[in-house]
Amino acid sequence: MSHTFSHESLEISHLSLAVPIGGQYVEAVSDVSLLLNAGRVMGLVGESGCGKSLTAQALLRLGEHQGVKHCAGDVLLGGKSIFAMSESQLRHFRGGQVAMIFQEPMTALNPVFTVGAQITEVIRLHLDVNKQTAKKRAIALLHDVGMAEASVLMGQYPDALSGGMRQRILIAMAMATNPRFIVADEPTTALDVSVQKRIIALLRRLQQQHQQGMLLVTHDFGLVAEMCDDVAVMYAGQIVERATVHEIFNHARHPYTRALMDCRPEIGVRGDMLPVIAGQVPAPGQYGAGCRFAKRCAFADDQCASPIAENAWHDGTHHARCVHGDQQ
Image 1 (cartoon, rainbow, N blue to C red):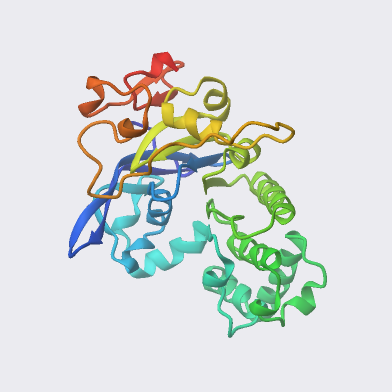
Image 2 (cartoon, rainbow, N blue to C red):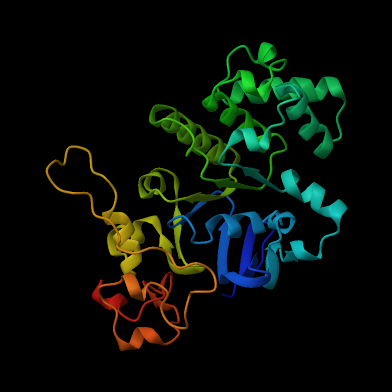
């Protein structure tokens, strides 16, 4: 994938990652290329086990602490490689240039420090301000994410708060230094439906207000429809389809994309069983040489046993890794 680099873009370029299984490294993410642009939200969609979180964490080199190995490719901010960064540069990059919102707030918040201490620490780490200025900014951020009694909340501990409140605090921390890009890894999965809606509306408002680029990791096409401008569909460590939201919803080319969309429950439709995709995502090390979705695909034939390249439609802006894309 060839692009002109900009300080307003974050690019994943031909990235491959491996994970340790049974005493050896096995490729789990294969030749992934994506471009995140300022002011746009990219949805990364797929079932559990497809490699979405591994890819998202690679944007901040977070997987290295869990033994994830960088095999090939790069992550580039304005053309500069994050894999060439020193530990000092990386600390300022994380949170300063690219911030992450995790799926489960209590894994990201420290239970022994107050909310105020954790937000002000982020602010002081990345911005040259004193404690008083950092505290004022922290209170303003909590107001921005819809938290009443922000001054009181600063003295609270995370385990005294609800899941929705903790997720809002994570969003405030992510926004604290006005990063160029946000990585949101299943940010509403742990919340009930009514809270999910409010959190998504908040994320979208803040992202548009600050014109940030965002990578939204999800398995939910309903969320994609609400939040995203562009979509990349991931299956078994590969990007199998990528296009704008409009193109994906109206002209999906890959059978896996269509199957995921068909699995969405529809309000008001009664009497029919919810469709499911038969089989399961192959584990790393069991991908095979051909189409990785072939064993679960109704269109699979002999052509699918060979490696599948991306095909392009819609003036080259819609790509799908499928030899039967014209039949969809």
